[in-house]
Amino acid sequence: MPLEMTYGDVRKLIESEQLGWQPRADIPDYARLPNYALGGSIEGLVPTSEAPSFDLQTLGVGTNPFLAVRRVERGLVHLDAVREFFSPILLRQLGLDDHISAVAEPVTDAAYGDEIGLAVPPDAGAPPNAVDWRNRWSQNWITSTRDQNPCNACWAFAGTALVESMVRIEHAMWTRLSEGDVHRGVGKTCPDLGNEGEVSNFFANNGICDPGSWPWRTDSPPYAPTPDRNGRSVRGPSFDVVSVANSKDWLDTIGPLVTWIDVYNDFSAVHGSVYHRSTDPSNAFRGGHFMLIIGYDDSLGAWLCKNSWGTGWGVDGVGWIGYGECNIDSYGRYGVRNTNPDPWTKRRLHNGNLYESGNGALHRNLEVVGSNGSRVLHRWREGGPPWTWGVASSFARDAAVCPTLIGTTYNRNMEIVYLTTGGRLHHWWTSGGAGSWTDGGVFGPAGCTGVPGFIQGDYGAPGNFEIVVSVGSALQHV
Image 1 (spheres, rainbow, N blue to C red):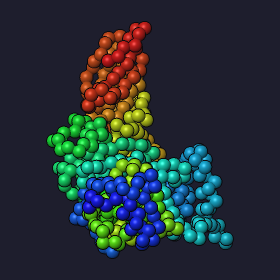
Image 2 (cartoon, rainbow, N blue to C red):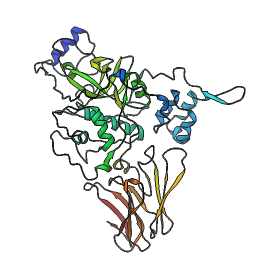
Image 3 (cartoon, rainbow, N blue to C red):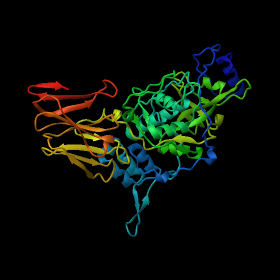
């Protein structure tokens, strides 16, 4: 970028070409445009004409009740399936029960009384005129704006932002993931370019961990995350490639998408209005960039994009980009489904002897342990219909009371501690949260009573196990 290009230069270009947008008003004309980093490589991009089409009919109910109802409105899911998956109490609490009844009551055959379909709105097959994931159903599903500068790491930031948002949408969990984990995990340094295929492969093979395990850094230290990285990583499949033709459907019924854009000088000055590139020769091409599309608006003719240049760009890091601008509609986009949250996040929501693990098709199986006075009994239930409990295993011979069950970052293990019939503490664990249980040994003081409290704390990495148990008339911390 020419260093002499200023906000005043951009304002003159916009005015002369009547582009309809303006940079931030609080920046004087003489101020130079920021030299934001890029980093996008065109390698692996699929022309949108070659991107696979997506069949909305394969979506199913999903795990988000708001999206489930939206799929009913679109005629993609049967009303009964939503009511089977989500309890009437939850639907009423969210204000959804009456809504889905109004838009999708069953239609019956007048002669025989058989159900022959659903009464859905006449425009059910079409996406809405606008979507904004910052405010859908009065909720914000998008994580905070980050700043990649001075590194060429837009590809890592956009892919990480995608996964973060989908964990929120699919599991109602606000997780913070590390762009640095992807960046250094694939062996890149700040001068290097990257692409979303690299993020997709890394995510599918390794997951993405939280910053406490490996932070974002602008230098290039050897990649050495904490030993429990495996249990502090959100997991999931490879990214889906989504065509422009399918993008609005995806944004409406699933979530955000990573997109490519060509960046020119004036893109550094984007603010609140819809960006259209100046064609003046001084507005030079700078390179390729990845961002996260979090919505669109047909009345504006624009995509709503979350950038990775901090809150000074756009409005708090988000800007409107006109349809078709700067090759934004020329290549297939990237989305992801079926994310599997990490125990580091889930541990803040569950304790006791009932735990929601990452097992099962929906990554939300319920796991419970109990005691019959000597044996430990492990049972589990799928995270969706038919809601039946399965027998996992029975083990141990000395469990006096109900064990305390947690999920940990040690390889996503499930671990228990219980009071023994001899008044000690006993530890067992199962690798990866499934399979047979391994005896971790008897430990702790003599004369313990009651059910021990058991958590994985934040001290050290991996986090220490912390236990509080009653001994005589006092509590003891182990």
